[in-house]
Length: 488
Image 1 (spheres, rainbow, N blue to C red):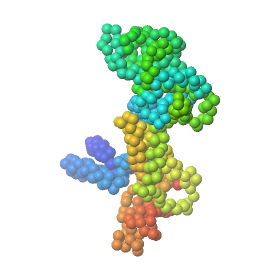
Image 2: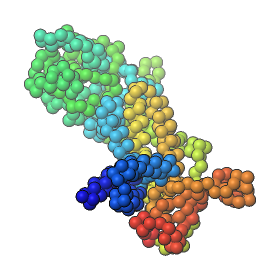
Image 3: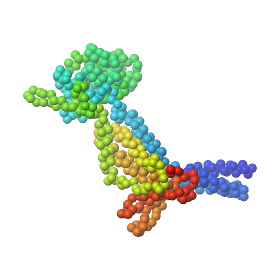
């Protein structure tokens, strides 16, 4: 009977031990189990119950004390180097996943769906390349079609209009329609649009291409949508297909694309403004680094109009250029906000392998490598709160990158250079009144037994930064055998 009681109470103590951190659990359980045998043998049930209750109280108080002194590993986020790198990796994956879900950020992550996008340019008036408003008239487009064969291998025109589309036996809905010349998709050279829209570019009648979002929302993903007739701009238009999700990467938002025949385009006024997409001749685009061209068009009276031809690859790189610029500003501002030296780490008199000596620097490099994409994608996500405002990405990148760099330095200083675990058990040594006569500061220890770290309370000329002190093998008896890690 007594054995059954002893087993039961031992299981209860085992449950109480889970309040403690894992590294303290086994020793605490052995101490209380040894006392439990005498209590069960010599005392009644009330005393044993009080003893068990005291065990729970002792485990709770000891756990709180360890948490306050910073010695409890399980409450320290990223205490081990593996957990720290895993946390940074998950942060990068989460920001990248969110970027795929946000439409604006997704366009910066997904590659351009057009063949040889560097030679595909958006033509605009000089100084208005960053503007999303149309600047080219239809009359200028017609003139270029006749006179720029040596500059462009293909030209296409489109304009964005808010129009109502009427479905048979259905209410009208207002959409953003890209009214384009019939050769738009052939100039883009992409497979993201249905092939039927590119097979008969000069055919009569208007053909409507639906975006993936419009097809799913208003047409309920109808697989038999091709050939259906809708009323648009006062005339009938047949639906020729559905574009893929990331098909449109040109200026202007479009819910659908209306491909007009050449005769229909000719009926539009010459002063109609829109966007012009062109393909540069291969002979003019031989330099792989060139993505911006200027075009001069002489006018009557000796005047010359200047136009810009900006490659789509340049527009796709802009978010990353802004990120690199803001990250560089954060790097330049880092010395003004925190101390850069990591401390003095003398050569270990005990032989260590080269991999072990380089482990600390590899860990620092890995942290910086994982921080860069995490901050980059996070800035793209934050920029979607204010579409079109590039300063938001700059400010977010600067603030987050500066904070991340400061954290990286603090984290590196707080770790053992051998095992990369957090240093613990801070103890204040010395007196402030004798700061210039004796050492005064905080001493931390590696719980594995690799050494001490001395951090000065007030930097002086003879002790300006933290110093690491390696422990020789004679200290191994102070630490528990299971905690001692090899240093060779």
